[in-house]
Length: 148
Image (cartoon, rainbow, N blue to C red; front, side, top):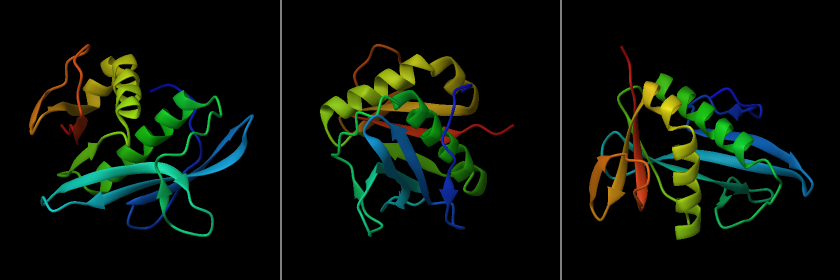
């Protein structure tokens, strides 16, 4: 993605990233956390506003800082860093609400041609995953990095 990104600060494990969203509603600290699931090699991508003084994510906060594309590009850059350290992993993401999942799908759709060059991307329908198709509604997304 050739879009401006925020500078990321990461823990050495490359599973927790932090950055600051800048806009009309001020500077808002954001967290990206790749959390291990019960499935070996599958991580959940948790994202949202950082709770003051905590390392917890508020995934229901609405920032309205006018920088959603820059935030999406920043999350994708964290994905690249995560997959560089954990190349055989899968990352699952879904919105905290149906509306947020729809926003994620719209962002994926907008940049799908670029995404599919570096990632295998699947959409969740029920309990099953299918190769991502533009225009299809999904309840979640699963990504794996392509390596030559």
